[in-house]
Image 1: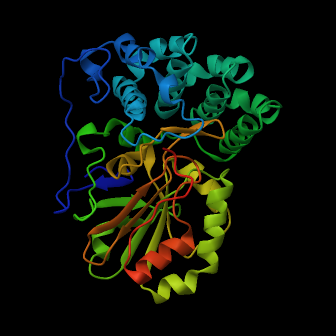
Image 2: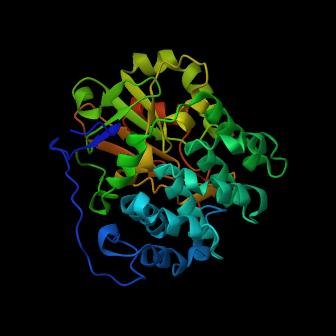
Length: 364
């Protein structure tokens, strides 16, 4: 089994194998990806440019939990990554596209593939692009590809608080990371399988998975069956004040969760470097898991890249509670950045064995 930092299984814990499938689809198809081996980069990017992302811009949350815009985005990135380095020139050219969503997905794919030849064009985006989401992603990609010529430019970004933050993280990566390929992230993106998306169901067995935490330890959900109630909390990132408050509450309530025999996992749809930022030097009592490419989040209905928060495409905030029998008792996928139960409310539901909750400001 490849070590991708994650393994997905069915509720009976059989590995899910992913094989490329050739499909003939219209450019407007939103639920199925196109095999990169059988289609051009242009067709992949046309799926992005032809989709109306502005219908649900993501900036104010997305009330429609059936919205498929996130699928268009992540499947396009997946297919670009599958196409690989042989199409580097076309991906770099896409950084100059007039459509900001095309520029964004191309930038993400370039970062995952670590295409150093994109360095000069990414620096142009960082300096000149009119979309702060694209500028921030360009900063992140410069760090991912190891483009050390960008270090000074990253350290001197002055415009856009959120872009500045991502630029600082990218500069830190350039200073501390080596030049080795991030094969875990690469394989996670290649392995995304839309047939597994949103297959978790309340009242049924929780889909099994193995994810590594920020310290490198692997955690397998099924190993806790019969032992612990499990809480999965998908957060945004280190810049999120709500997430930071949740970390504070978890720290303060350590004894209460342990007394209730509850194992908590916070989860982030970023690679190891980004996921480590919120942990910092803290010695957390719970594991913070790295969900590369948001693969497990997609399984659990978290919809990676559905919202824009702090000028970054990000997943829905989500809380999942799984009982000791391995059954999903509660699944809450938020409609905006602050929409999910608090840490005390989550523990109270478990202690009372009552799983009814709706945030008073849930988007309609």
